[in-house]
Image (tube, rainbow, N blue to C red; front, side, top):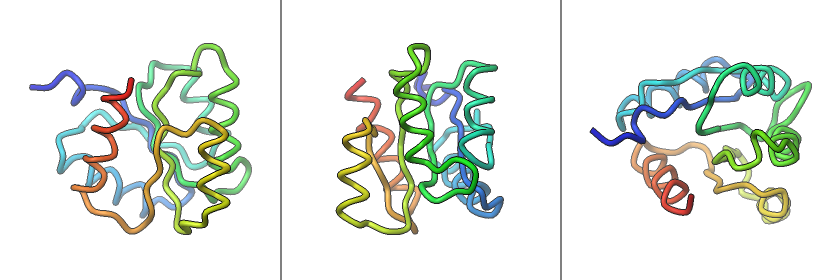
Length: 128
């Protein structure tokens, strides 16, 4: 079994249904160790209270958006190097550019399949 499969993944999305969808996709590709947060504020609490190894975050969320979360993670010396996969409904070029500038590891456009998710995670982990 690949050691990466045990890594703890944080899914951040304000829609419970979307979190469930992503959780199920992760399960299909062998990732069981998953926790959830409903926005960036909640996510930061989780990130600071336990060892999380990978973040999959939605872009559009109330309280603290995915891009704000990304900036907060990259600005934190403890969390800075965490792989961060941004999930977005719009593949707007400006958004992508903004995310890349903020240090996103990769991004994925909704809706996506387990295969696509698996590819993105592999790509990010290879770069680490």
